[in-house]
Length: 247
Image (cartoon, rainbow, N blue to C red; front, side, top):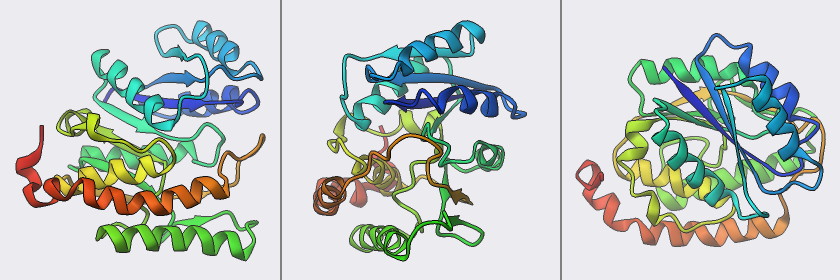
């Protein structure tokens, strides 16, 4: 299964080379699209060098500035679908998502799932043991909050580690997605859920980033809490239509 990883980056110069090495060591047919938002630390230039070192396996999409997670992924999805990908991965560039879990996540697609989520909150999943109690509680509550409002049966709706069948993404009206922050991840999963796509939940250990500064903030979390209600309202038609609402 030809799989392309879309990797949004902003100031990931310390992480990117090691992550590429770890990914390409896996027994999978992997390709990589780096979507760099003009990182001041030179991540884009490092990505270009890596593309030269791995011809045909890495491409780089340079953007003029920080344009948001939504457009990074949607621009990337459009590009890699046109290039013949059979599956598309969303993941962070900071090693918080263990590359090795892609093997099991890919196997879930091959077993019939439409999308596989790397889940911190199913049996076998966990978050960084170094996190203080308040941070673990905030993460768990954020998931509980979104799951309750949206009526999800999934355990980890905010996870950013996912692999999608291309046919699944083709069947989703992605142009309707409005969120620009991390709530984008919830909105995208909710759209697929409303349309009746089959989810697999693969346990992962979510580690704190190795280097660099986290991009999560209280403002982003507060925005996400408000946006969940808008997501529920905006997709009420798809929830009624179910599979018949697919594009």
